[in-house]
Amino acid sequence: MASALSCVVGEHVLYVQPPARDLQSGGVLFSDPFDQEEEFDDTGLFGVWPAAYTLCRYLARHPELVRGERVLELGCGAGLPSLLCDRLGAASVVATDGTDEVIDQMHASFQSNACAGQVSAMRLDWGDTQQLLRMIADADVTLVIGTDLVYPLRDQQPLISSLSVARRRFPHLKVLLSEGCRDARTHARFEEALQALGTDGVVETEMADDKLFGSLRVDLYLLHAWRQSDSQESDDVEGGGEEVESACVLGETHDAGLRSQPTSDTRHTSLPQLSWS
Image (cartoon, rainbow, N blue to C red; front, side):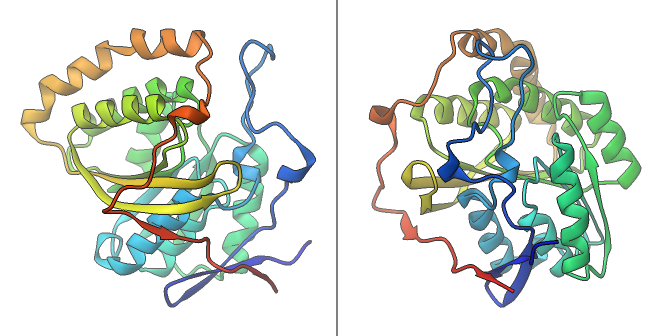
């Protein structure tokens, strides 16, 4: 087995598995539904993406958000946030992803980091609402986290719908999501959907270096525990999927002219130095 890749987040050194895909080889990250009969997404096999570092840096500065929580990570990929949550004292961590190879890598990463808490890795399609609800109930999850989940526009509606149902079923559930703005229209739609779900807004913004798009704005969103006042807005989200789905059918893709520009209240951060060990 190849040596693990060390990542430094604050005072914590964590080890993830080496990328199983190479961007330089020109491999496909996710399929276009017009090109493939069966959709696939292997973004989780290209290593750690910028939004994961943004979330980890935030959690490292605010360990009280994690300590004692029962965490579930959606679309974990390399799983750096899950590993950090264990290190910060989470009561339990469930790392999930839709790719079997990612799950295998997570098991290896748990061993490389000698995780002290209750950790597990499981396959999950977040569009399968019932499966997500079962996982939350079985693990008594209190905090859901996710990074760079919805760059393909088609991923938004399944994610938002499942989160809406989950937050109704489990009113105590809190959510932290970190997303890179690679396409302004897609990002704006995502923010609108989160507002309807009851987000506390953007709690952190960084400018980071992305493997594909160069300088990239990353926003971190907090969704508080469920409030009764969120009910009507969430009804609108669950019933309003047609617009998002129709945009997916049209195959909306990245437009370099729509990329967000840095603003005065953001700071630029390069990815942490990585080393083989």
